[in-house]
Structure formats: structure tokens, C-alpha cells
Image 1 (tube, rainbow, N blue to C red):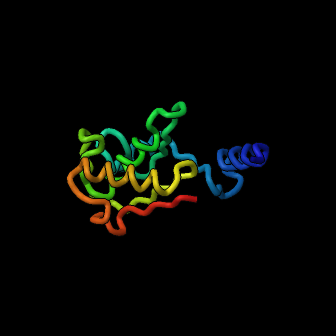
Image 2: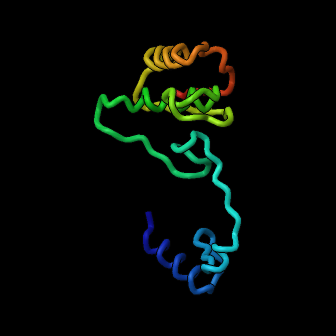
Length: 130
């Protein structure tokens, strides 16, 4: 990452010397007057367009937690049986660690716990194993 270039771009954007590519400043009055809406994908947990990360030590159920979120988003069923999912959305689940058999088993178990089959999600849940 070229932090010098990012710094120069930030200064130029703030000073208004060139049209910014990333750093677009707004005055307090502009921010106050703007109308923003938060679209919650999982109520109280995940909002559309906001960054999110799942992190933790080895064997702390990160993959299981993430699969429950993915299946909940694809099905519209509550996340962890607790948090409402207002609308179903298409989901991409990318795993760089777990193999196909373990993810297939996990996805099937999560779906079964929510009262449906993995196949019923059709193209709303897409998994990548690379």
C-alpha cells in the first residue's frame, strides 16, 4: 500500500485542489441535512454496505457462525435463532480453509436446524471452496 500517495490524495481532497477519487469531505451542515437510511440485513447485527469481520482463535466456531449468518440471509430465517432477517438476499460464502465435505455437512445441519433443506435455498446461497 502506497501510504504517501493516499496521504497526498487526502490532502488534495481536503484542500479542494483536485477532484477526489475517494476522500470526499462534507461540511457539518451538509452531513446534518443529508438523509441516510440504514438497511439492516440482520437486525442489530449486520447492515448493508457496512464492513464486517468474523475473527477469533482456532476452533472458536467462526465457520459455523458464518454459515448460520449465510443461511439466515439466504432464507430469511432468524440468525442464531434470535436475530430477525427482514429480507432474503443472495449470499456468497467463500471458504479458504474448510473442505467441501465439511462445509456441505455444516450447511446441511444449519439448514436442518432452521427447518428446511440446503437444496431449497437454490441459487440464494452460493459456496466457493477455493
